[in-house]
Amino acid sequence: MEYVFHIIIMLNIYIMLTLSANLTIGMANLLTMCQAAFYGIGAYIGTFFLMQFNLPFLLVAALVMLFTGAFSFLVSFASVRLKDDYFVIATMGFQLIVYTILYNWTDVTRGPYGIPGIPGIRLFGMFELTGVYAYLVLSLVLMAVVVFLFHHLVESPFGRVLNAIRADEITVKSMGRNIVKFKSLAFFLSAAVAGLAGIIYASYVSYIDPTSFTLDESIFILSALFIGGIGNTKGPVLGAVFVVLLPELLRFVGLPDSVAANLRQIIYGLALILVMYYRPQGLLGKTIMK
Image (cartoon, rainbow, N blue to C red; front, side, top):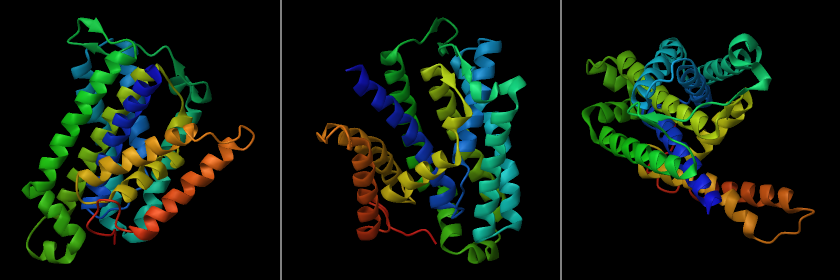
């Protein structure tokens, strides 16, 4: 049963990551390849505060979201000057820079050796969360809060402006809207939520290393978003469920042990191709990324 709970915890984390990516990619029409970088920054910053100061969770979460969001301005600054493919390459560069720093700054991050013994989250400064059951409840609550907030954000005036930017940025600019401000704020919120997911992950597994926050991880999050559909809340949630649960379900298909791993990858890849071929807008998406 703990295995099932572990999968649910990881699913909750990826739902938060996919929703955070939807804010910039699905709503502001900014295709970023660095969501895992913010995920990793949040994990390492949260680990620092947990291990050095042993702070309560609410304070750690606030600090992680603030600091991770601050790093997002490095990317949003580039969005003002770069467009389309050039912006994608710039965000990929940021992802690679963050990974390289995490891997080589051994005095701080311990590099490829990782950081073990990360303490559990302390709620209200009184007791420490330990075990899969505690993190199951915590991750479910945080995921529900993020889904609720993002659902209302999509329908808010801020969300409508972001959707308008996706549809026709020039028209929005001609109406007097500050495009730079809206994009920067979208990046800040997106990075902050990714950072929150990072500290939950770090505390839950009690160990982190740079290999958990690579470009491949950003592509995985991107895949979940496009499979589910952009521009709404239901699509990213379903996309995260699809990419997290499908590989696990394939473990129970009963494939021969000698070829099981490779066949699971083939079946998983084929499923992704079929979904994108027949539903290019995503399972629950209404629009296609421009």
